Image 1 (cartoon, rainbow, N blue to C red):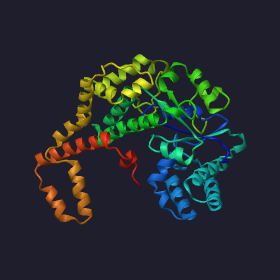
Image 2: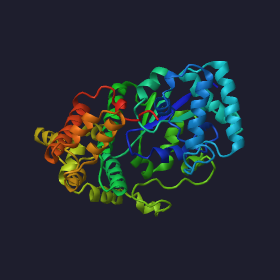
Image 3: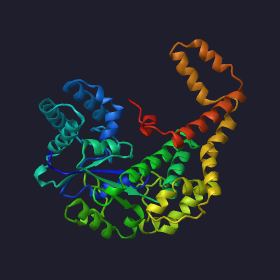
Image 4: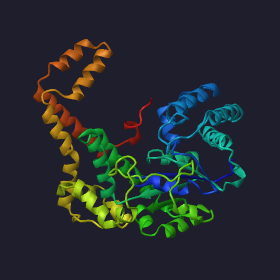
Length: 398
């Protein structure tokens, strides 16, 4: 199995990675599991700290059975579909771990081999393994761990991508949380840093496919992708399917669950632009995105609607620093009580730091509001100027 070439599928943000995954899903030469995000699992499960095969087995067993096993309600993420498959998977998993060890690479192979055995997939028929990593955080680690692997990324007009996430989160929460705003932009910064760092590998071992090009001429793009993947082109690459063979649902934040649009019209460039313009309805939001991600616009030939000047860059950075409009309105509406401080108080009381909890509860509302605003600005400054390891701010252990 270790001789089969590996391609890691990732993205810059909300760019259509699930759609691209679904187009590869039923290709007979590809071994691809549902979107596991192996490296993310490794981080949130703290698997580096485990000492033996039994501990590794238990960690994966608990995670898979709880989140993506036979009881999973999300059919796109469901890894195993019956108790028989679950038993086959883990019976083989523990044998492979005991035989090969529990370092990250061997566990990666053990997961994929156990999946193939559980699904009765003949690995001799597979030309490549495609492994889905939903966000770009681990790409440098992947290249270090698997230096012969390839990276396939999908990109989309940042305005359309970011507007979709804005819309989805505001619909869910009624506002855009600071955490989500920071995550959105940091994933783009992370992906951009990766492309800059590995620009000499572009086309050979790193390929970026544009969402818009796929909508413009899917067969042309899939034929080019098949050539880069060194597999045969198949008509199956022109339809979205899941592991069950069923058609995959359309992935769009603007749609209700289960809603299927008229795809021919829904993804027309003019209609996509109408949607993101409706969400990014303040001029400074488009200005901010186009300036902060200017290199993306240049590299992937996205046309800007604002000028790129020294003044526009300064304005964009100032807009980036301050809390999103919906969040600021929420703070004002909650004044003088703030959920952020209530959470801090609860954590301090839980830690039996009663004096500190009492001190925070006595702070005047005005001071609390000022602290929240400056903390938000401070985090943006860190993200932009002193990012360090960006992933440390996200995907915490469970």
